[in-house]
Length: 499
Image (cartoon, rainbow, N blue to C red):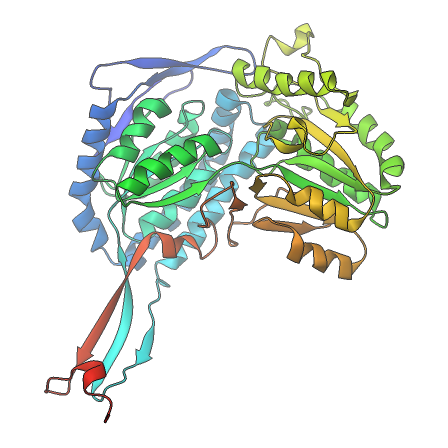
């Protein structure tokens, strides 16, 4: 892949290849609409070729010692460190993430690569005493097979790394569909793995649309595991199709994440956290702070400063270090976000700032949307309950800690949550009562670390976790081994009791 505009091909086996029908689609920058490149538009036949490649590579890769597999990830991490600025620039260009945040996206993959590489020496089994004499039992972790990976555009390197790197060190092979809005960043991440010595066929990429390539990966009879990040509606469809085929499935989906601010909180710290949580990555994070639940007089004491600071946040080119809010990923996404705001205003919600599509010529016609705060949002309303995925904060009042917890928990999602308070007893009660996979105390709802599990409850996921030690359970099968060295037939429960 060269500098924009480029032609991005699939990678199957050891080669970059076009689609079987030579179809491509355009990739344009959300900052100014300029052409970033052309990308191969795959179809089911391309997925067939990629799965066949992954199947052919499985035997050799799965029997490669796990510590050796891990060493490849260490080398890839070093390459990603050297290439961080180059990949970050591509990411900023193709999907609009600010350079600072793009570097953080890649750093998360680097951290995950070092962690996953070390797991090559820690794919532990267990031993336990047998109930019979001269017999032992233990478990091994075994690779499963071909893993289908489908990822979203908002973290085009970090999120794929959470799935791909653990799957690889566990000995699986992969067919990956990066998001069509940010395929080049993903390709550069994969290139670091190939350059680090990953054998041909172990990681294959097929670009394209979800309804074409993604659906083919999900339905393919030879993908035994599916790992998905995206919307809840698509995740449900994947669960239905994959479930009928008895595939192992991990789903990471939507969020409607609350920050509760108590009257005793450090309000300056809370404002800092809410601004970063709500408007970082232009609100395009599954962990973004979408709801601010303000208890008692904390509302009157913080809303003015919060709004003034949000008003001052600078829209602009993500390559410019002074930019605080970059563009949304597409025109369709901006229209969706603005629709939420317009409907909320029509329902009587108070617009405190933002809420209008900018017309400033200096923004060059990109898909920008300002930091937007809507106050007096009613419990149960669309804005209070639905994921917006943009720089929009819904402010909801609560009279008490208990009411704040009720409001936080009444949405269908349960990914991340936060409480700001100086009362440690109250903080711990919130940790136990908030229905979410992640809870922060005196910190925003974003900021996951690579060595801790990541995931949610309710409509956010199906119970599996990424990050930390959790995915190594998901990407392996447990095999139980019994060794009987008694030299005689022992019939377990029949022979180990006198009665």
